[in-house]
Amino acid sequence: MTVSRDTVVKRTRRLPIKGEVMVAQGDSVTADQIVARALLPGPLLTIKYSEKMGISPSQIRSKFPKNEGDAIVKEEQIGEFTGFLAKLFKTPPLTSDVEGTVEAISEITGNVLVRTAPIPVQMDAYIPGKVVEIIPEEGLVIETRAAMVQGIFGVGGERRGP
Image (spheres, rainbow, N blue to C red):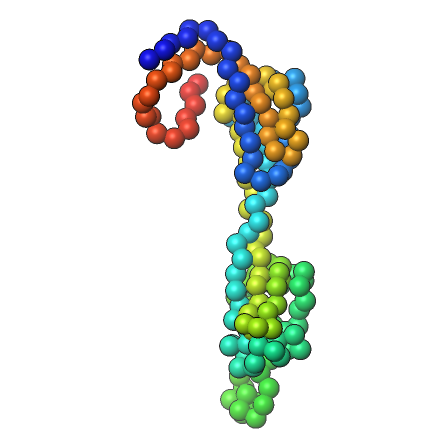
């Protein structure tokens, strides 16, 4: 085990995907300061449209009221049952059980893929110090003075002290 009482430590903080770095080179940061953020794409959900409507997958483009890129709201009407039995039994219209943006409409499977709202991700500095380098749209390098203990031991995940 090695102990260094006073040394310069540089730590790279990088977002999981491209985003926005919110500090500039030369800025001083605190450990709990948000220094970068990004929007992770939301999950992709499937509406089994042709199955629910009782149509062949090849008919989906003519029956589904939206196109790729259109917003879809939960409980929005996305299909109406036609035919004698639907009118006789007053079948209610098909409504969306998901909310998001239509990403794909498949004429092969008859499914509609909907991307839900993006998930915000924020990254803190983790250590107090000075920003010595900006990695555009990805992260930054922070430099600080610290005592460093090098060895092999486990203390769990990332933690920070006062």
